[in-house]
Amino acid sequence: MRWWLTILALTTTIVASGAQPPLTIQWLSRPVGNQDSRFPSVTADGSIVVFQVGSGDKAQIWLAAFDPNTNQWRSDFVPIPNTNTPLLGLHPVISADGNHIAFASLQPYGGLNSTGNKQQVYVLDRTQNRILPISVLWSDTDGDSARDTYTASLGNCVPVYISANGRIVVFLAEWLPDLQTPPQTSALNIVDENGDGVAEHVPPPPNNASGFWLVLVHDRDADGNGIFDEAGIGSTTTRLASYDDANNLVPVSSVHISANGRFIAYSTPMNPVNPDERWRIVVRDWQSGVALSIDNAFAPSLSDDGSYLAYLSPTQIDNDGDGQVNEDPVDGADNDNDGLVDEDSPEFFPQATMDLVVRRLTDGRELRLSGLQLPFQAGVSDGSAGWGYSDWWGAATVVDGADVDPQNPNVAYVAFHSWTSNLIDLTSAALDPQSKVNFYRGVPNIFVARFDFANDDVNLWHIVPSGPQWAKPKGLPVSLELTANNTFRLPLGASLMPTVSFANGRQLFVVFQSLAAFDPNDNNGLWDIYLATVPLP
Image (cartoon, rainbow, N blue to C red):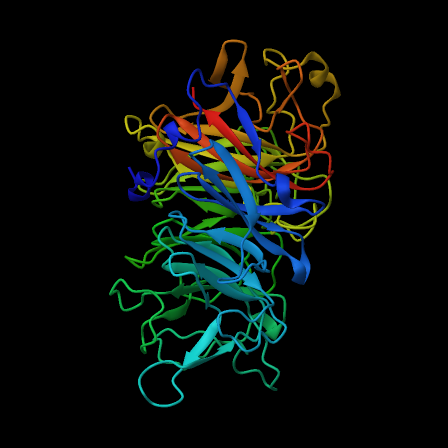
């Protein structure tokens, strides 16, 4: 059991007494009003959810918290410390213990004089009720061995994750080109690996072009004395993290870290100098320094302890029907001696279907769920098109089964969104009859899958008349609407970006954003945040 699971015993709070229903979905963004709510992030115990309301420079950070006294959720904007003014920002992520919220903002918070009109990364420390600038270069201007001023990043930054106790903040920073001729060093000005206030040299991006991003890791307790954000030289550091397995600096897209901050995984082009649609994932262990590279893969997600990695990979096709895949790549040669040349090369993104892969990093074993469908809109794998943002960032969230059922440590649970209807069982499912006919096949739904490494088996969460069960090759989404007749139906609106917390009692809390109305009072037609309580069979 992870140490932060002792925070709350959710079995006696969020779940009401008596027989547990097969699925419950609660509307967390109800008080928001006429604005979109997106990008949810949840604590390990499932009692706090943060999310973004609105967009652009007026977007606000909101927080939904479960009140065990009333057995209800309460949602409101997060105020700037010591005020009643909403905190403005984008893409909030909360630590597993619920004490720290990282976010991006154009506003100069925490003593920062100016953001330079660039999105800067901050942490709201809820234990101290103060905001700390993260994407900055600290310096000591009066020679007293204490930092007294800082300069904001010259490029935009956005947080992607914060470790369980809030110590490690991982964020993306623009890999700025060098305006000098010839180019010598990137204009990125906040890398300070020693915490001495002197910015490190960063080489220019590929072809000295704009549009690339780097992963930076900020350590709020670099001296390891247990006190965050001290003013002494070397107390905090900001390091580059996006190196490949040969220690070459590479551009990145989607990023994830384990809750303990030890492991980091990110997608990078297989050809960083001339990027195309071929991607790979690099996983780094900061403690041992070991790096692992996985080709033809993107959208990584690590379990809380880093033992499991979930990612997406294009489904490989046997193009020549010989029972093999990828045995004859495009190289002008007949590699399989069948009289044909280049007839069975690897499939890359984009294509018709994807595999959801879970790799157990302790031994390298993999299990796959095939048949995930891409969005119908044209786009690229980093989510910059399609639905307009982050189609595949957050596509999957993986949970170590030992956290849910200590007696079965060889299982990983994954919540993911997918556009495919091929995973939906319309025959034996306990669904409203009209739902089976009228549901819209062009929108994504949220699914939960169990990857059983003890039995080399993959199953989908399902509801049949007798209750929840594991099934294959089809199941049901956990994003199901409940009708007035107490039957479930498939939604007509899109659901995306699931994030999962876990607790005792063999259940998962899946938080996601949706255009569907899972509450009869939700008639705003906008993105809303919902929490599904999913009992495990």
